[in-house]
Image 1 (tube, rainbow, N blue to C red):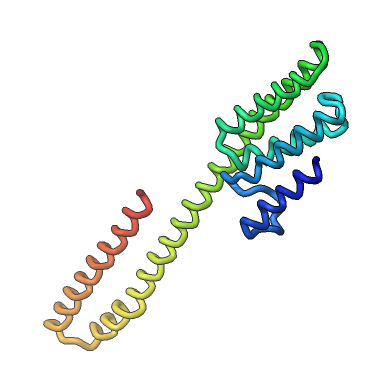
Image 2 (image 1 turned 90 degrees about the horizontal axis):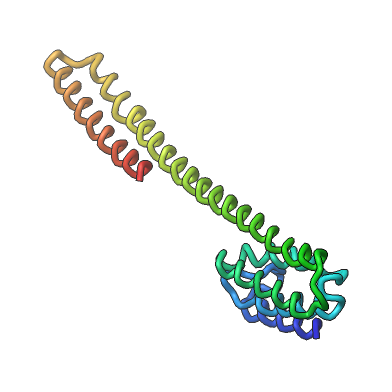
Length: 189
């Protein structure tokens, strides 16, 4: 039965055109056969005392990164109820086995939150870096093309022409300031 479940999982992978990727895709139905396989494997080989019980923690790790947090919590509680229903009696060891995945689940949820926060910050930093590169290019272009040519013309120009060149430079500086202010608004938003 576990082999059949694994075949169903790989069928899902083949249908989704990602047979080489072993982990399930985010928000996909690929987690369903994995859930079934873990429940079947652990439940049929000794339940909470199974040698395969640690696979449940690997399953929880994948579940946290594939499903929304509320679905992860509900699925984990359902799985724990399933294992409780299969067990004989009620003792402290069984409680420890049932509570440990829930505790680990919340640690995994915290890790997922930290990962997503870091990913968002990384994307913001890349965007800001691109904007700063564009600003730097604008300033470089301005200095190389406009300012250098105007300064060389200032040296040989008459006082009247110098006044016109200075006005032209001031206008170009205002245009540059306007462009840079636009980029600064983009960074702040």
